[in-house]
Length: 126
Image (cartoon, rainbow, N blue to C red; front, side, top):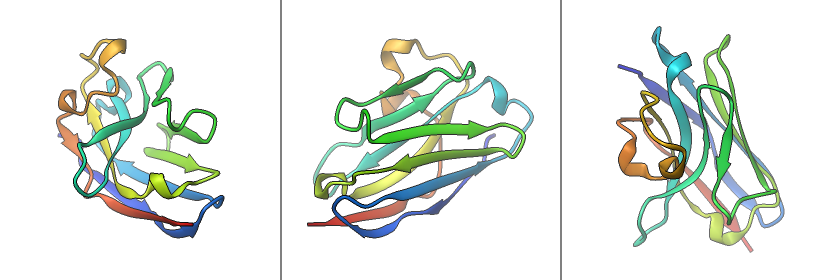
């Protein structure tokens, strides 16, 4: 298993920045695709950003140019830097991982991921 423990998040005004972190453990994490997903009240969970085992990244169109996903396998930390935040970014954010079996076209499909963090709230006010 790949326990995922999140930190960060909070409240910020539009245009501000926040950073989310997700600590992971286990010996096979280097082979995993890992990413960030979010769910706003009354909406479906959606993929935000994913980084694969080769450090290739994929972003939702709504966050391209504003969010950056990264990971440090030495420190075992997955991060999401969120800049130029908008009220529509308000949601519960989750980190997730899967064992590298997903094709690129499905990277942002939350149904492909079987390990999840506990979630952290991000609230952006206008």
